[in-house]
Length: 94
Image (tube, rainbow, N blue to C red; front, side, top):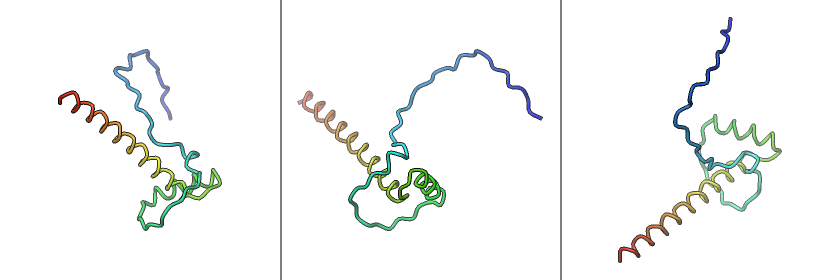
């Protein structure tokens, strides 16, 4: 039925670690003030968050909100750093 796996000691080549910018599902359970919006999400995404919310005894909408907050904060910091570097570069040119 199944073939036996044969392992070899071949080199893996060029590997690089990609930083994980998304928070873990359990980090998405904290409450924050917000405003109400209407949004259509994929069934797959909603089912994932509902399952994770059940595991962590919280609301799936709260987890989605925290994920969006973390994404926005990450990119806000990236934009701020990029603008700062651009200003420094322009100051050196002037």
